[in-house]
Length: 115
Image (cartoon, rainbow, N blue to C red):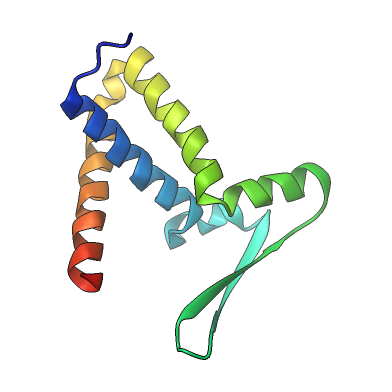
């Protein structure tokens, strides 16, 4: 159908993973989430951090907040954008490659710390 190579598929998956994480969790993009939700962290009895999300507003604002708080939801939209960029805007391939490298590094780092 698309004639995509296995290597390109891996790059797209890792780029999608990294961009999704960037939008939903990273501090650098908090300004995107701030108008729609607030996030606090509490410790549970075992000492684990628990992420608490409170949506702001109603209607569309609340819906966008619920979307931005859900990595599964954002991941679907990010994957669609990544695929469209790959297919129709080939000049963005270096950006996708950077995201993929960062995504692979995040996976490796997480595996090293949490084994």
